[in-house]
Length: 452
Image (cartoon, rainbow, N blue to C red; front, side, top):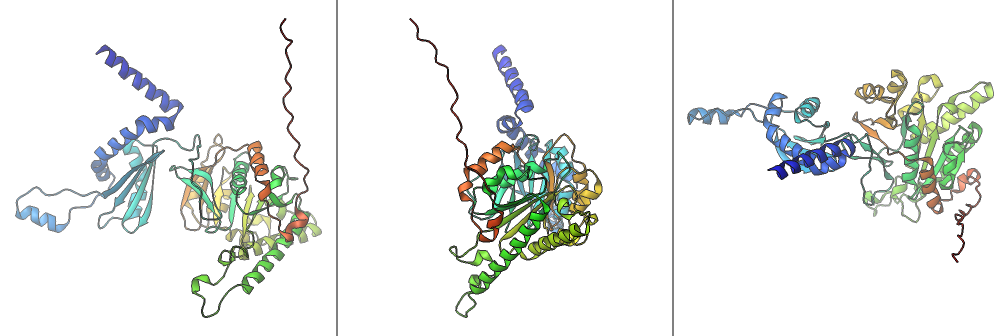
């Protein structure tokens, strides 16, 4: 009994140490078993307490009265499947007649408390089927991206981890243009670095506009097909992109294949319908601190500003079919930046907001698409850089956090894939001029004198 007690104490101590220092290891060794038992044992009573049950059907009540049996109690949603993940549990539920997915979504906080888990989120898979994703620990405290198989879908890259433990992807073909807001030291630059690092191994042309004299994007210049570090060059670069877009549309028109013997699915309407040998390379335009492009102090600067915003609005409205995608970053993106800004913002489907300094900045990101996300964005604490709220025009939103990627790591990734940088003729005048990489000298080793 003494040895058994000692072993039990050691196991409890090891579990407590793992839960404190390595919550992911604790979850995979101890937490998942305890959580699964807790959920399955408490399921019926918790659902009843949270108001997620419905009375038994009338025919069962009638049968019970006729046969003089006990009256059946209320019924909870039926569990279709329980799946264990590296961060929590996933329950797929079949709702009873009369229940709604909104009721489950409204009760997620009570479910989290009742099941003693860190977080619970819900989403409706199809009519009458709801998926509950439960996390056993704070997955955003120390982000560890899972190993992913190569995705066959083009222009879809992983950039962050969601609060439910799933991977947040940036899918350009689904959400072509996006806006990223965030105050100073909120993690906006790290998010942008992760995006560049994720796109570097893909067949895509990267175009950067960094009006902070290039301090954010120019270290990654070996993987960029075009870069601009001031508003004047940015205006010329955007005009070149508009001209490139028009040339791509002429190519699509010439290859539309609208003869009667061509199936509807093969008629070309964008670059992804073209043959691979004819398809132009897709272009991702990254704008760092968009306010620097919209501010002006003289009449000449105002003309340049209108030219820039007009070009960006054209690319946002027409660029998707031509394979041109926008990633616009800034601290604020409101109507105070002048004419055309709100029209441009309306074209940016994807929205990501890091910590902001005021509620109006959060409203600029989510006020017109997901009002519930505004409160979540202004509640991001200052000691968690990188935590952000992401949403789109569907009204859904989630908390995410990108893994910390240093500038040196991003530079190494871009240098490693520098040979993949495509040459786009329209952007050739803006290709960064770079020297050859200097060889790294070998460390000096002092030779010790030979012993006599």
